[in-house]
Image 1: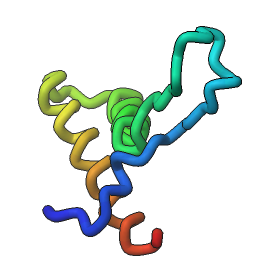
Image 2: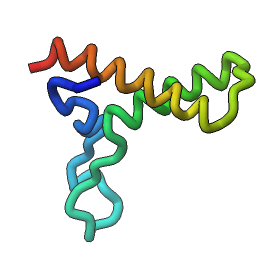
Image 3: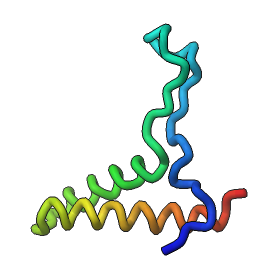
Image 4: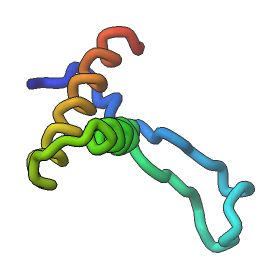
Length: 77
């Protein structure tokens, strides 16, 4: 699966330095969109009562995140 644009590596919740408590920090990137999407997919999979192993569930969450990133890449410029 090749992703047209690197949308998944864009920052999901960027914060400017003035919003950071640690004055020594230059910036705070937080989670990437891909990481955020994977965490949300993971929550859904776990809430559904999946009996799969942690490794399988993690891979499923990542696969769902990658699919969403790929779909979004078609619409974002």
